Length: 208
Image (cartoon, rainbow, N blue to C red; front, side, top):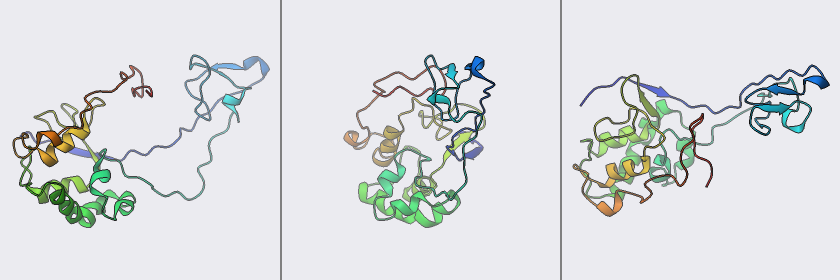
C-alpha cells in the first residue's frame, strides 16, 4: 500500500470578520458576498447597508468572552458509535493529542461488543490498531494524490463530499478481512443525497 504523509486538519468554525463601508444614503447598494451578520439580500450580491441585513455597518463581531468546545467531529459518526458508554461528553472536549491514551481501550471494548467475531478488517487492522486509529478523531489529509475516505485503494487521505463515510465505517467494523462478512450490517442503505451538491462554495446540498 502506498505511504502518504498526513497532516491533521483542525477545522475551527468561526464567523468571518467582515467589513462593510457605508458612506451615505447614495451608497446603499454595494457588491459584497457576505455581510456583518452573514445574511445576504436578493441575488446574494447586493446588500442594502441601511437595512437590517447589514447592521451594524462598519463593525466587526465581538469574540470576547470564554468559549468551550462542545463537539468533536473529525470523522462523522465515530463518537456517535463508540462514545456511548458514559464517556461521549468527555471525548467531545478532549484534544486530539490525548485521545488515543484516554479512549483507545474503551473504543476497543465497544468494537468487540459490536462485533465479537472481529479479528481484522479490509485494511488489515486488528482490533487494537483499528481502535487506535479511530480514537484519534481527526480527519487526515494526504498532501498529494486522491482525496478520499476510502475508495478501495487509498484510505483516509481526506474526505470528498460524496464519500459515504458511514458505509465505510460500517464496512470496516462488520465486513471482516475481505469486506464480505455481515452484509446486512455494512451499509446504512442510503447511497446518495436527496439533493445534488452545489457547484459553488461551500458546495453543500440545499436542505431537503
